[in-house]
Length: 196
Image (cartoon, rainbow, N blue to C red; front, side, top):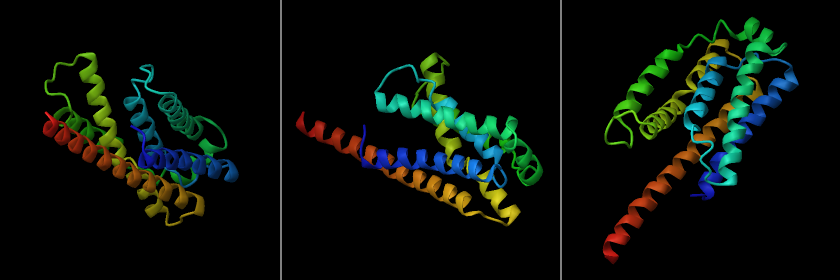
């Protein structure tokens, strides 16, 4: 279901990727950017888009591919491509010490316990649903390492602050979208019951 909240969320997230890549390219540096956060986002999209080849719409498929390419590409740039890898190693790595497992393990346990599937039989659809739920929980906390880097370094560049702000606006508009969908489903369900 596409609505204005979903479009705003998708495009603000796309814009956050563009801001981050522009900042890295302009500075020729990954200084001040959390690799842990970028790895967590890559994991979020890999787990969420396991259904990439189950076609829903052109819009949906294009955004899935773009999110995967951008998130994995940023991780590859920060790990292996000079000067981004060397500036991250020199300037930010010491402050980017937030434990990945401190976020991954609780999110995975939550996904095992709280998901839409009623029985836990580990068939392909159930595993896909658990990983999708895991990605939702992990995405909610994936920004924490970036916030810790900003707090520890004590310096916030404009483009990095803009990236964090736009990422936050993505989360806010996504929350509005999910509330709209929930309200619509409840309203439509109640309306159909009344018509029966």
